[in-house]
Amino acid sequence: MAIFNKHREINLDATFENNHKELFKVFSDNNLDVEISDDFNGLKFFLTSLSKEEYPYNFDVAFNEENILVENSYVLFLKSADEIVATYASTGMQVKVFVAGMQDENEGIYESISIDPGKQHYSSCQWVRKDHRGKKLGMCLDHLKKNIIFDVLDGDVNYAIHKESFKDYHKDGLRYDFSSKLATIPKGDVGGAGEKIDKVYNITWTTKSSWENKQDDVKKLYI
Image (tube, rainbow, N blue to C red; front, side):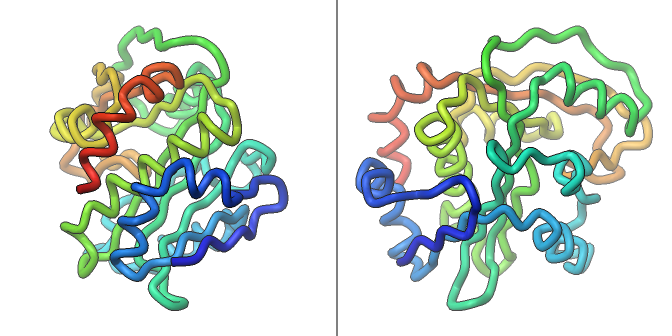
């Protein structure tokens, strides 16, 4: 396994790799390399080029390049040789800004929500190629994303949205702390989080201190 640093501002160094060696072992055992990048146009082109069978979601407009501040945003690729087999992305964005943008894009009934304050980071665009599913790669990529947010960018909160049926997965596997109803979207099909059949969306989040305190339990998930 190799780490390829292709981001102008964010670097995953040897200390970071050693601090999360149990996590990186999962990627190594699957003969996968990790790439961190600021190529959001490349991410969009890749995901929107996939078949609807492989990636049934609309691209999340929060990750259009014009919406990104490079210094607190990044793309993650897992690669087998030069082939991308999994993706994720994160950006520094306060939740009130995100929800306002979501309301502009998706008409529906929105709940009143309040999450922990501080430097908040949104994440989306998670995808694992069908022939690589069932290997914990989605979970591990999510955990890597959290480690970058909290260890490298010194963020306070990581949040995401998901369809209601994924609540247990986000709390038990991805180890977010909370998952609360955010909105009912009659047309469904919210970018990066659901398909046309999905109408109810939750917001899920965890904090830096909580993530640090649960590391003993998190590492047991990699075995």
